[in-house]
Image 1 (cartoon, rainbow, N blue to C red):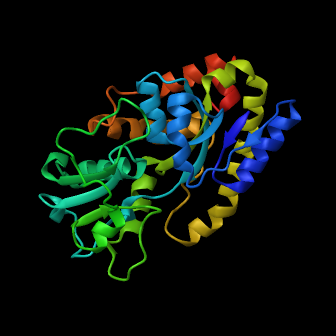
Image 2: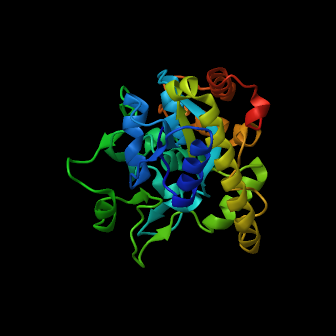
Length: 302
């Protein structure tokens, strides 16, 4: 059983759990972890893989043998990821250039959903520029989205003033000139999460359908171990979040019931943005996972 997880503690827990039920796990260390996504989704190169939620939704839409194990590995507020070197304000996005690593990047899907839902921005009125393809073969950018020249890099173009705005999470460069385009972004994000009852999630755990059929006991053991690890991580972070403005909404939800809200919202945003060829319903993900593992949804927090 080949396992790709970005966090060392999560990977160690998964390997230990799989070993305890007789599997022969191997941690495959890929950094950054999203580099493992293409091989996992298109070629079943690994059995358990940390996966961006939008990549998981695309895999489902294109009938790839990929299952959701409902554990959040990375969740974070996203309103702060739209940045500029100019004046703050969202209305200025209309008619201006905005760079994003990939059109299907989960951070970008969330942020564009906010622009449409909260600020009334028509996405076709923005000069979008992408820098990479997505992870799922067959997926293409909408016709109204442009591609940066070969070899161009988003952070460099942004700092050089070739872009008016950028959507950047982990790849955000360190520069004192950078400011969030949305004023008071942390407070706006916290209020959005309180109103929705959930926070945006980026990365979840996925299992290959072949691995689930071949060794459901090991896959379930990995789920249990990671669910415990995520719950412990969420508990440790809760007090720190309360001291800030994040409120009581968990950034590490576990189980089908807890992931229903954020995954459903991500699916709706992705479909509206032409990231998905069809709307992927959450119950479709639940049914596929439970069928492959031979369990009912309650076994996985349903």
